Length: 88
Figure 1 (cartoon, rainbow, N blue to C red):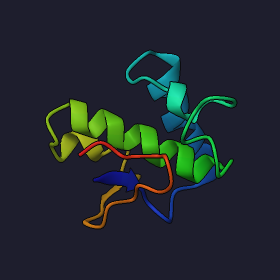
Figure 2 (cartoon, helix red, strand yellow; figure 1 turned 90 degrees about the vertical axis):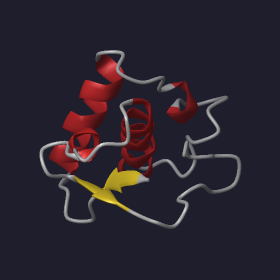
Figure 3 (cartoon, helix red, strand yellow; figure 1 turned 120 degrees about the horizontal axis):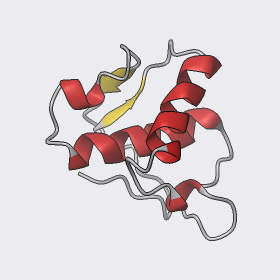
C-alpha cells in the first residue's frame, strides 16, 4: 500500500489531494461527507492516504506512482479500517 508520509506537511497533503481529486485522477467519492465510507475519521491525513493508495494501485503499483513529491511511503500492513477498505 502507498500512504502519506508522517513527515508530510498539511500543505503537501492538500496539494496531493487537490491534484488527485481535482483533476479526476481517482474516484474521491469514498472520502466525501455523507455516504463516503472513508470520510471518518475526518482528517486530511487519512483522506489523502486513501486517495494516494487508490492512485498507486491503479497506476501499476510502481515506485513512481507512490512518489508524490517525496510524500508517499510504502506500508506492508493493511491500512483499511471499518468500512473503509484500501485497494490492494
